[in-house]
Length: 470
Image (cartoon, rainbow, N blue to C red):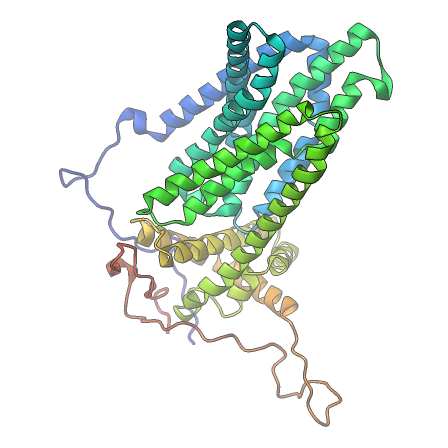
């Protein structure tokens, strides 16, 4: 195999379709990116200011500061957990910042206004404030709050589709949104509890503040993320479905949202189930549900790594990757070793380049996987070329690091040769041979890719590799 010459950072892309008149299509002013970003930032900033004023009005300045200091404690841990789950194909930080800001500002504002209005209306209509509070907590609040949080997931699903590829993305987006919402809600509850203690003079572990902190921050910091994750799973499964499966892409997110509302209603209603109703719901329902969803997410994460190992080998045959790379890219340990190797020998920029290479390669594997399942869009060819170009612009730094990581982490097979005391024969390779790859037609390019009878791209062919490949 000849050495590949330098390749441009961006290979030639297939031409984009012209506009209706045959020429380039210019977006209207409201469709420009800076307009959308500006409107979104303005909306979130105004929501943040309004919710800040409302919470401070209810808790007082001292209560607000105490609630803020206590409510922020679980946030870094929860964000770190969701970021860890997202390490196979890390999403951009701007998505997570949007989710957290939406949950803490927009969703919290919608919830506090809608819940207050609904509870007051029920109390006026029934002339029974106590039952209105119960009905508001068990019926109104779950519907309003889960719908408000689901709006952030829907926005990313519609407008950041390339970053929303499966269940793990849905879980991460939903979890970070709910973490932001719980942060603001905890400020309100803890601030009010502190105000109650100030009136009664209670302090120490027997105070209302301590009890509220124990229940909301120690026992159940995962409560809101657990509810909203069900909605995220629905959107994640819908993201795996083909674009023509409209019923599935609509029914699955709605089913997840209804499940989230139901679990939220059960949690809020546990206080009405008697003296031990809260602990019964917590131990019998919430903890097992949390364990089950944790197992599901970790299992899905491992399946994503397997998808990387299974989808990338055809690109080895085409010359874009080396034989060791699919194995290394499908192992989190090998990825970490590759980044450390590059950082140790070439510095921080090389470590960052290897991390970007791993992310682009994972996106390429998921893109091909979706295309084989009929879930790729019409821009599949363009997106594939873009990802391959990003990989090739970093291959000189990433390849040695990934090859080292593959050698360091590949399992050594057990040998039972005669006359060698169980040690491998000198002629035997230390690592197993790479499996056979699917058939590949090097003369077929994606610029002229065919489509199957479902309208999805036929992924049998691949770009023929960088120029000069033999």
